[in-house]
Amino acid sequence: MTVRESFLRCMRFEPVGSLPNFELGYWGQTVERWLAEGLPPEEASAGGFYGHDFFGIDRRSYLPVNLGPIPPLGPEVLEETERYVILRDGDGVVRKALKEGTARGTRASMDQYLSFAVEKPADFEALRERFNPHSPERVPENLDEVAAHHAGRDYPLCAVPNAAFGLYSHPRRYLGTENLSYAWYDYPDLMHEMLDFFTDFAIDTLRPWLQAVSCDYFNIFEDFAFKTGPLISPAIFREFLLPRYRRLLEFVRSCGIDIIWLDSDGNFDPLIPLLIEAGVTCIWPIEVAAGNDPRELRRRYGRDLALSGGIDKRELARDHHAIQVELEAKIPPMLDQGGYIPTLDHTVPPDVPYDNFLYYLELKKQMIGRA
Image (cartoon, rainbow, N blue to C red; front, side, top):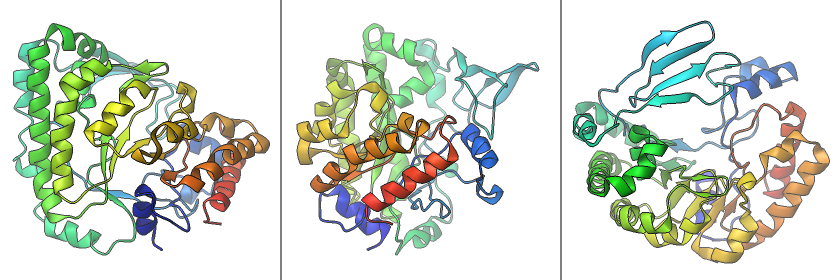
């Protein structure tokens, strides 16, 4: 059975002999540590999203659909010192970034966000001009070759790149979390307009791609929660997001895609019933530090919701025994019920020793039938 076949069967709660071996990726600082602890240098550039033969992590691929502004609003360096850089990124966010500790493109701390592309309602009018779904840059001339490349594949193919689009996350890119949190109440008409616009934009941009290429699943990126709860209420979700989710996912299903993933860190438990109502079929990566547990989610939602993730990355920083306890507590009972792909609950942080990661992978492979 191919990785693609096992992925599809797992996501549909069908019997499967072995599971895909997926992981999210690794910090640049993690790779630097692992190089000092025995990782072969020729393996240091690989991440984890698209497969990594050395670690036995399976491939999954994504259509390179551009759902951002064209032309982008950056990057542009506004100020730079030995210690930090202030820049405007492609989404128009002005951010201050510390240079210290940066490794392989990964910063050691989050950037400080100074301003956003939409600071007042009128700013959206200028921004929307950059979201023409029919811009020539949105669809390559060789789309038929892209389709031929993925035909007959043995790996799952997602319709959009990771972290590419969400009906909460797209407005947040251009307003920022704080401004968006106020906008639901201060500018409801603007938010309805913005969400209709981005939904139409996503559908029109995706249409030629999904007419040409048969995909296995669709991923909605939101990150709309923090450690103890969501960043929007169920009432806000029902009024503003649910109708657009339904319209977007109706289109996605019309293109033959029935597996819908929702990506968010944090604890968005109050929103899960609404996500199921909207058509989401799987959530990930199930961040344990935010109080999530795949066993509890399965108990509550059964076969209404497939799951991926839920293995506490913090346990990998401890020792082999802690890793064994974590995996034995979660993987066997979840596999008995189906609809679950075990992975860490985010990318591997730099406090994880190389030997511990290898032990984790080996033990997981044994449990999912991949040893």
